[in-house]
Image (cartoon, rainbow, N blue to C red; front, side, top):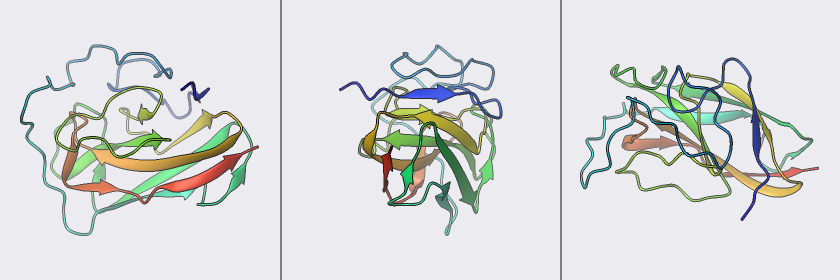
Length: 160
């Protein structure tokens, strides 16, 4: 399914690694040194009790113009670029029109899984007109969700 998604660079938005260029939907993730090899068992970093991630904008049920302005927050953990292995830290990922991924593996990098490896807190997304779901998922320096995973409830928006 072609989602017609594009990402506009805002605040240094980047793909999986802090030194790579912006991720374009449909592009394969560029090879980086901060991406874990796929194995049967990945070590998940613990998340502190009470850590939460949420959308500041848009709100659930919002009708929004293109490009869609998204802003997100994290409470109880530190926001750091991918590749930075600090305790109780990670970076944001937006899941677009998809379910939560396998929590034991790195989050995919594609049109439905947008990485903010530079530690961004906001972006612009261009989506096809119509209804879309968005969900935030926080992950560690290797893009692996924490144990317990820190994610927001899925929201639904309508793009004009």
